[in-house]
Amino acid sequence: MVTPRFGVSSRTVISSARSHALAAPWESLRPTKVVGIEARGFILGAAVAHALGAGFVAVRKEGGLFPGSKVERIALPDYRGLEHRLRVRRDGLSDSDRVVLIDDWCEEGSQALAAKQMVEECGSVVLGLAVIVDESGPGFAASFSRFEGFIRGQDRKTAAREMAMLLPNLAMLFKGLIKDPRVPRGSKALLLFGAAWIASPIDLIPEFIPFLGPLDDAVVAALILRRLVRTAGREVVEEHWRGDPAVIARLLRVVESRTGHNKGG
Image (cartoon, rainbow, N blue to C red; front, side):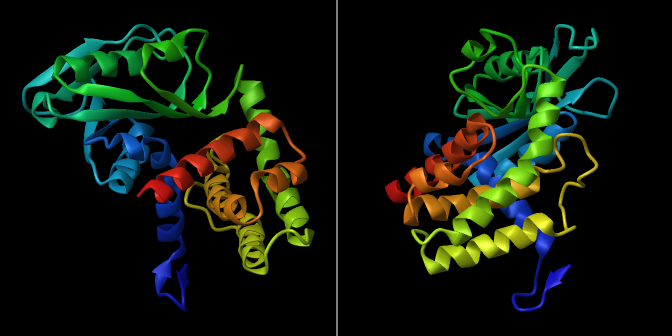
């Protein structure tokens, strides 16, 4: 779909919004490279690298064509009990690089830990790891200087329930804020756009993909909430939230980290 007034694709707009939201926690650390773990880590990692103005480096699993000198690790078994040989090219990293690791999901965290070891063997500094869904066990986050998870789930049912309620709760939040006299008129116009977007069938990530489908809507909501936090205040936003307080806290954490960076720059 093309927006006639601006002549830009709606998919391009939401792709940019999503990548900036994923990149926000790392901007102040000024990473030079983003490392994505095969397979969905390639998509997310490349988007974050573009948003940060950094290079992208792929961690590949065994089997595909991958020429050049490489560092390799066999990761410990994943949640299915499978071991994977991971590879990264040596010429993609140097001792001057500051690296963020990106993946979509973390349960055992074995592949992320193997990727961290490979990056460090190349002489680079690992700034941290970011994932969309965090199901890691106690103590895993301490393996990294910084660990960012957008969704925390004790198990798959918890994560599924949280994601299933995300869009209805966002719709209720926007409806309440539109009616609130403390919200400025310009911000209400953004809320109307956000409500229309959530109701729209347009998606960069199809809704039928479990857990990841609603991510586009969450990122659009986060960008709108960034404006609301500045113009109406965090307390007003939290007052209208009807879902799990931990979910809105995570959204606002992304919002405020991005807002703080803009103020500083």
